[in-house]
Image (cartoon, rainbow over all chains, first blue to last red):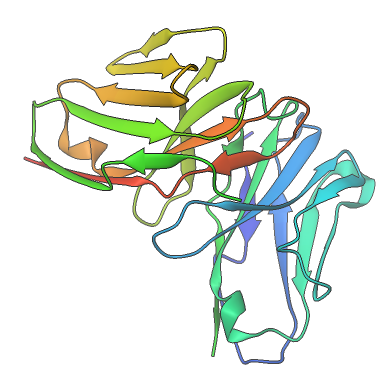
Length: 114
Length: 111
């Protein structure tokens, strides 16, 4: 296993378009997290899954955002009707357990909304 | 929300010198973690210290935790050019599943 992977690495889209990102976690990890990071800031929590269940969502996750983790394996994060303020790095992480465990991060997907 | 706040924000040192970064937080925590992020790469976990621990070492890294002051420090000894990166502290709360990250320290090690 080579770690957490994310696809695509970069995405440029026009305002109003929908985009979808994919994350493949480390296979034996049951927890999967999504974070957003803007320039000069630390990552901000968006949501997390335990197996296929989405158990927590941040208030940062507006109605335009939806995440899924079918079958408890890979996860997708979709942003509908993108806005310029959505431009950021979207990071995925996985772990064995809750926040008392280290999280393994993917390389991120950099979204630019023009 | 961002809980950790690192201090200082930016640090430039010569190779071989030590680098020290501080982090403060506001609520009770279960653990505090330090991560490194190189330009263009994802976050890499460096070290985790639990709330009942006061100091921890890993290679050239030394982390301290003072729960009474709600602060932590990360010391990198004998720095190398490859240590050039942003360093983030992140706290894990009891009964919580998210990590709350600070804004990060930019460290530049000059060869």
